[in-house]
Length: 116
Image 1 (cartoon, rainbow, N blue to C red):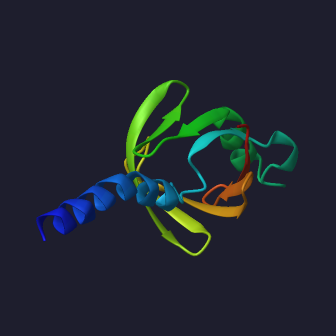
Image 2 (cartoon, rainbow, N blue to C red; image 1 turned 180 degrees about the vertical axis):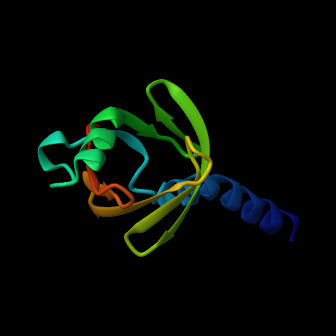
């Protein structure tokens, strides 16, 4: 019986990394993105200016980094819409993900594309 318990413990310990790897990070925003200046927000000049000012950004598991400044965020999602609580202004952002490399920051209609 002791050998059986030891074998079960060993198999659980050895399978844990595989189970964690299988879970992976399902947040499609994680990575480096840039404002898609060619597919900007259309006719709103203020939104276009804000979109161009954002430039490059990086989403990490717990922060949004814009122009080298890291802002702590937490993520929640509903379907393909992701909400970042926190962010540079403390209010957060709503981002609609279109594909693995295309998304839109809803408030300003700024389209962003993944660069890695």
